[in-house]
Image 1: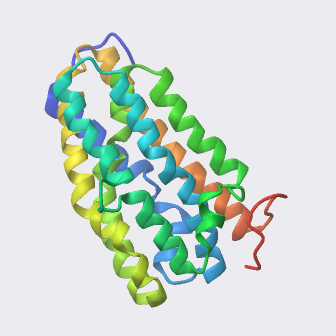
Image 2 (image 1 turned 90 degrees about the vertical axis):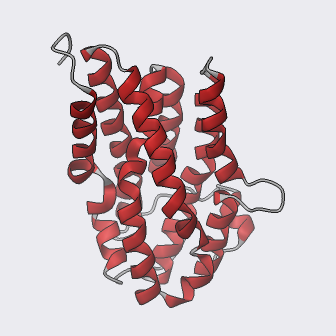
Amino acid sequence: MSGGKLLAPEELKRKLLEIGPERYHHKHPFHLLMHEGKLTRAQLQAWALNRYYYQSRIPVKDAIVLSRSTDASFRRAWLKRILDHDGAGDHPGGIEKWIRLAEATGLKREEVISERNVLPGVRYAVDAYVDLVSQRTFLEAVASSLTELFSRDLISLRIDALRAHYPWLESGLAYFTARLTQAPEDAAFALDYVTRNAASREQQESVINALRSKCDILWAQLDAIYFAYVTPGWAPPGVLATEV
């Protein structure tokens, strides 16, 4: 819908928050299997390796968002996201922490960072996210990050599930513990920015749809992993070869 009555900021927030229970990937069958302790080590390896491609592109998409802003205060706030993932000085960022998680599954670092075994479906989905923040409006690019509104509860559940069912992953959980505080801070800033700057109903609908699109992108990544490594288990040529 476009051209309708402008939503009050709190109503827009409510509509954005409603997307999580409906479309966020916490309900995906792959995540449900993970949290029930029903994935094999090989399946967790496939997940960690493929998810690395997404992690590696997060600071890239954030740099694109940063480059599109003419507001210095916005750029200063958004820069935090890049440092959180790329790291700074002696402090490892989220990408390095994800590599350590992948290593905890038994993968070699070089195998992960080479990205040569990434599923085509995962690659296309992640590249679509970079395209979204590049090609759609600036407000939509910011709004697409709002899946972080829903991630804290999933991360808390995941930490407990991984510790309970896959204790050999303990050395690789630093990524998730850091995101427990980083994600809510980032989401709060983006939510405030979007609700203050969506000045027409058309813009408001566009940011709602951008968040839905991001949820679809996250879901599509898991679809590809599930299809290749769970059911029916048809991994295409040129990807991680593993018995699951």
